[in-house]
Length: 424
Image (cartoon, rainbow, N blue to C red; front, side, top):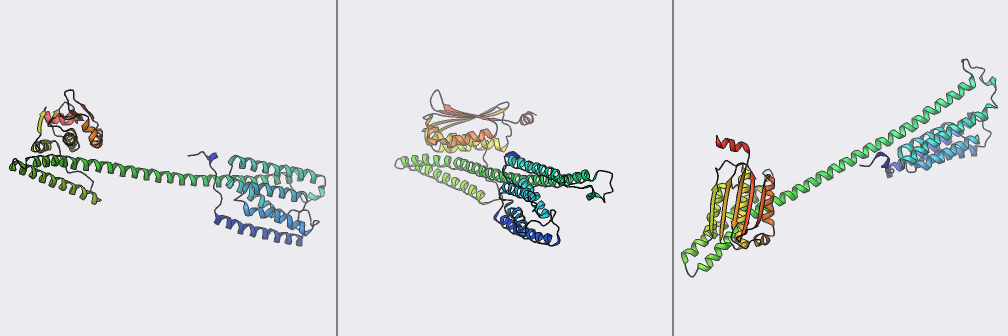
């Protein structure tokens, strides 16, 4: 956010400009009418030696700029100050409305000035000029002031000094309030603009957060759909190929393979229905069908039914796992097996689960074409796998085996309390 001195207050709105026009014209009319009243009863400070046209001209010139006090505050202040001093020099200035105009101009320059530093120094300069003119006027008037002019004075202080001090104090108060309230109005507008800016930033941040949440959810749904469908479709493809090859040689084998294809298709469709049903229900979180390490053996049975060799072993003492860890382990095995079947052309898959002191290690190896498994998958499955492991604070390694094939090894942290509970 910019500092206070860098901020520029926006100009008045069209509605505010119309209001300024109406108020300005009313003030001009009132000032002209007051000139006529003052001339009629002889209330001019310097008398009525000047012509009515000159009196009216100065009253008009000192008040009409107020129409633009918010759109061009600095220019208005300079014009009114010049006309104000010129009218007093000519001894043709109406005092009441002219004083109000100069004070309003000082306030407007403080409240609406575009350049903060220039507005501040301009107001200080105008106020200094006003006091300078006051001093000059008193020096000029002092020669014509007679002691009899203060014959009714009863105070203890010298009359001339008292009059001078009273006028200086009055101008200090009025000019000070004009300056102070201009500053206050500007600061109030700045605080309001800051609140609007902060509200806009909050809206943008919330929109960005919502967009990130949508993207994250889409990625999660894409990962879940990939995990749910890809494996079944891969196994179905292998079984369909086996059925085609065995169709003429062994009808029973072909029939078993087609039955497995049918079951795999039905399972994939059921899981898709669950996923889409969750997506349609706004109050329910989107989640894949629950599957954990207890279903790894079932997963490999389907691989064997497809005609591949699948080895499965569990090392260490199994302990209860959180659902997130168990599901992640299952999905890692499922994804590695899917890649081996679909892209690597593997014939043998070896799956091992190791329950270590603080980790569950998932190790899946195959004898396929190595890096082709990852390249053929375009990284979608491996990305999802890494995301799952990272969310649990684990690590995953992928790469070619020395003896040929491809290996996926993931380590998922175990909660220490589970170990203690298991041993007791």
